[in-house]
Length: 80
Image (tube, rainbow, N blue to C red; front, side, top):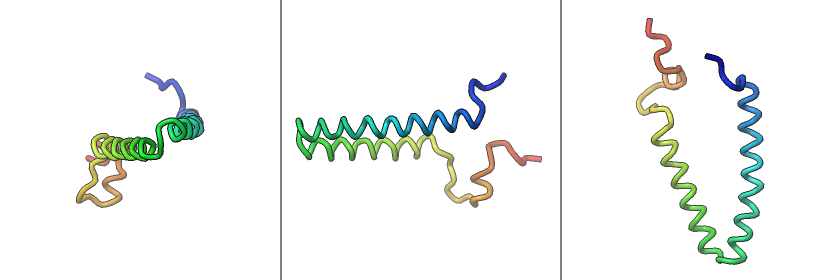
């Protein structure tokens, strides 16, 4: 089954979404800073960072104790 977007299209869409999200979050943070204060903005930023760390830890590749070459290889590749 083919993919909806080829690799190049996925990369472009992901990059565009990332840039758009960054632009929107700036205005959300400025609005929160003005209405809620610096403490809420910094706490919210810390919560987002912790969530991103957990996301990478849970969903990222398990590479502890593995060389870069074996960690970069897709799962199941090179098992001749």
